[in-house]
Image (tube, rainbow, N blue to C red; front, side, top):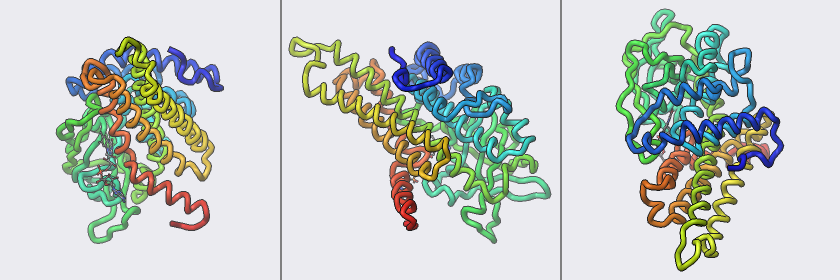
Length: 395
Ligand SMILES: Cc1cc2nc3c(=O)[nH]c(=O)nc-3n(C[C@H](O)[C@H](O)[C@H](O)COP(=O)(O)OP(=O)(O)OC[C@H]3O[C@@H](n4cnc5c(N)ncnc54)[C@H](O)[C@@H]3O)c2cc1C
């Protein structure tokens, strides 16, 4: 199989990392993907440990904090390779690399980085992220889990929802209200907390049974008077929401890379199948109706990958258009993944609809990329808002 990125200018280091990711994905991730999906085996620590050993859990953390100190672009290429094999493993890698570690890097104290970030970068501790609740998804600022001050401590109570790796991770970056019921402060009344998942009072709820991404653990989290010392608060007590949005801007590029990986795998299966399957005495790839389909699928994979890396470059330079381009890349890649996987099922006909072939899993896995880290509708709201703010008008 040719290198996905072999035809563009990569440094030798980037090329080596992409090849390592591809080899690891094919040899160690792909073989168990069908079983994990079938058994809804939500979490495979052995694979996460291997991700850590290979450095894939500390890719963007500076070497000074025990990471690899690589750029966002290199990380996204590696993530795409993992997602080609199993989107469920890719989401663990994405959440860990782009949310809790980035939050600690940006807002953590030296002590917090020493205690948490270093072992996370080395892959010894796995991080999760918990913003969503049953009643607050797209409208995340309306969350209601409460952090109450008690002397120097914080005491957390309430219910969170949809936490990826929320039962198996070692720590979770969790968002709760730091304002009081008598004095609500909206987006400035939310704090970010470093919560060890073995803290007394922290309890992971049932694992959601899902359409796709069945090898990934998604759980509710119950907080029953979880007492944390002041060293567990990240940054300022009322700024957690701002921190979360900042991290999610980069995080959604990880989801876009996941979507490109899913779509790329579906395309590859469809192209190979169409060359082998014969009907009416010839390979079905010779029928123009299918060639047009395959052409469009190839186009969408390449176009979404190109936009993803344009957005990554802009993000790395910190330009003002980063927010809009991150949303565009995530929206485009997730919609492309849905179209490409749907068409891949079609190219394989009845076989595509069975579990004998991987395209039905890819089709089911693709859907969530249109939902998490901002739904497609939310990204359209952001894009439109940014189009106007660039003209100097607000809305
Ligand atoms: C598998 C999985 C893993 C997840 N992992 C995590 C995690 O690790 N951590 C975490 O914090 N969260 C996680 N989430 C939660 C995820 O981020 C939310 O599901 C997502 O933000 C959408 O929120 P919601 O499900 O409450 O939908 P809602 O916000 O209720 O949206 C329902 C529908 O209404 C639309 N809508 C909402 N507001 C508007 C509007 N203003 N204009 C137009 N349309 C609108 C939405 O686009 C959507 O179509 C996960 C979710 C899933 C499914």
